Image 1: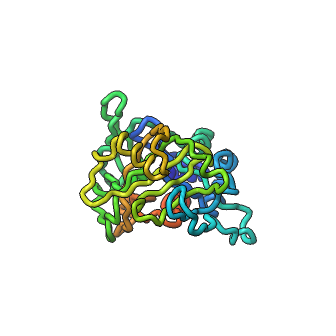
Image 2: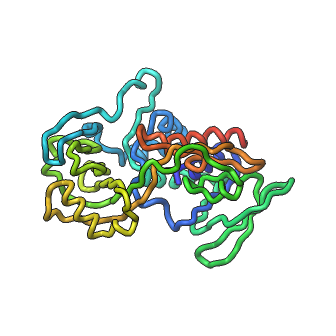
Length: 314
């Protein structure tokens, strides 16, 4: 993810060698987070992935959020997504670009640094620590074989449900479930209803649309439709057929063609690890703290974790 890649990049700039293990075969294919704040953009300018990233940001004329009675109903209000308050204190500016593009830009930049290696289809199973360092036991998901890696330090950037955090015996404080959600990434053509009012997100006041929202990904045909779980709902309910019918209902277009690209299930939480370090192991990103999405602090905080920890380790 963006935190592990950022840590490897920040370490490389300090001439420190690292290995990034990723259990999947590629970087994420789901948009996930959409906002990159000023401090993170300052880091990206230093790291060299800033210009690649800007190619994929949302059109600036759409940097607003609109509330309306329904998608085709009366508009209630609109709010600017980002202010320009920082313009007098830094040359960096916020950017509305999705996490999948952030990950790709970080990965492409990291390939230029010989100090870091990214290994896909590798998953850390367990580890042992002694006075000389940590020995990690790794599953090669491509071959099914077990590999071992000795390292000075171990950094857990493995997300909200961190297995490494559990193995370290580190607990979390705070509510672990403030609501469950399914984000449906899809391709739909609703430009007839958005071209005169471009924005990055539509929210609705009609109670029949409670728990549903639209988020623009590219200012064109790519969208994420957010759906909260009602009481008693499970993941199994969110079949393609159900999601398509819900999308058609939300936009009020029963015959709309919907091409589902993928789905992401997530749980909103507000948690903090009781410690960030245990001997030679550290937690960063969602493994250390889980934030509600308001304000877009999750990915940004994790990337800034990585930057802060890298120079301390160096």
